[in-house]
Structures are given as structure tokens and as C-alpha cells.
Image: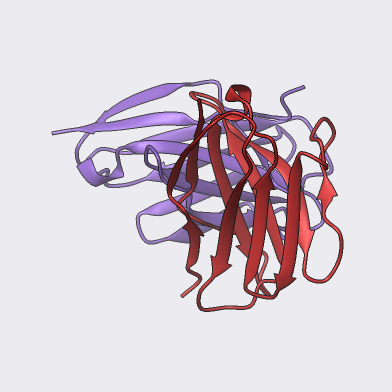
Length: 114
Length: 113
């Protein structure tokens, strides 16, 4: 139980394009999902918290107009990186939380912006 | 401001021995702590957690100890196995694990034959 999937696992795009990443909780309903970013050899940094049916809460320094988050259902949250630039290249990971207190993580999405 | 610190970037242990990974935190509001294991290019896998009302939690080969006065927690793995080789992150939250997690910088564990 508590399986979280992400799609795509890897994406390469041109600078200026937008990329959408999906995060799904496969066997439980997630009232809250979180989006993290990890740069090489660094820790996971929380970008935003997304609650189903409401606006996401962004961490300080994260541009909400650049990283659009939609949590349309209890099993799906999406992160759209708009007008991506090379400095947005990173490993993006989502987590989902159901009734318990534990966050379960997806496998991550490697984004490379050329 | 690194509120959760893992001061050892790497640790090497022989198979069968005990692995001890340490984590320190500075925020006294943290009341829930978790350990995750992570392989390269994969998401973290939950291992074990502990609430601040406890000082020990055990699950199979994994035991987490919490010393609130020292703001220190540790993960013990015994016996260590080669498959345990990965990066281990400790994470902390306030108000229960459902709130946002603050991660440490990770410790690379290598279990050698």
C-alpha cells in the first residue's frame, strides 16, 4: 500500500517551453500532496504544499506563477514548470499524505532544460 | 539556516555490523521525525518514524532513538546488509508528520562485504 507514481520519469525540453509533471496516489486518497526539488548532492527542498480543492501554499522564494500546482482530485496533483530555463533543471519529487502522518514519495522526475 | 543536520556525509560499515546514522535539529517545535532511504534518481522510501512523546521506536532491523534534550536522533540498522547501501535522510516536522518536512542533507551509507 501507499504507492505514489510520477509521470514522466524523465523529460528533456527546450528553454521557454512548459512542462507538466503528474503525481498520483495509486492506492489511497491524498488530502495533501507536497512538491520537492533536489539539486545534485543537496537535500530535498520543499517547494509547495497542495491541498485538494484549494490553492497551493508556496515556500518562500518559490515563484507561484512559474511553478503552477493543481490538486484537482484526491489522487492527482500536477506541477507545471512554465517557461522553463536551464536553471530549472532538477529532480522534482512529490509526496502524498493520506490519513496517517507519513508522507510517501513518488519516484521523482528528472527535468533537463536545454 | 539548516534546521536539520546530518554531519556525516558518508559512513562505511561491514556487513553484519551495526550502522548508526545521526541527525541533529535546532528547531524545538519539531515533534515528529522520520528516516527515509534514497537511491539515486529515485524518490525517498519511508523507513521509520518517531513521535516526540517517545524516545525509541523499533521496526525489524531498524531502530530510531530520540534524545529531545540534546535535539538528536539516530537510526540504528542491525545487522547491516549490502542492500542497505543508499543515502539516508532524516526529516522533521512540527504538528505531526502531515505538515511540511524539513530534510537533513543526507548520509551516504555503504555496507561492504
